Length: 178
Image (cartoon, rainbow, N blue to C red; front, side, top):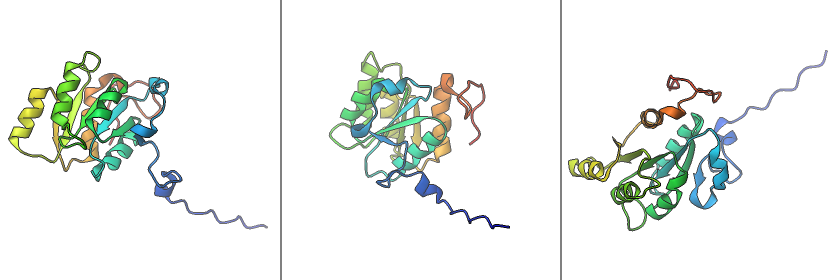
């Protein structure tokens, strides 16, 4: 009787990375897919956070795992360019470049193409003044870091009820288990 060859152990993190070592499913503005691919059933979550933000890839990977399409940008200029393609926008208060996240929220609310899109401000800035500025600018939800990825996912799904789906993509009324 012939013995079966031993199966090679698979490192799940290595399997989730591309050849350059970056996590799959995390799009950067310079590498984003053509707009026509955004018409699939996966809602696009625009993540406008500083590139030095350690949690950016964690949030993006978590959202991707639960069936969303994260698109990461690091400054307000790129965020404004990509906002039309996004179904929801998650921004920090401190961004790379001259414009901060509160100004980004104000500009998105003044633009007819993006004024209806849900906006979450996710920041480590715990000052009451920062929250008040973000709410005056028009954010829908203000979350403080450290924020667990499932708390962000829950807020995203609550703001996008038409996109709540199970892992097969068929519509459902329940939130996925997280």
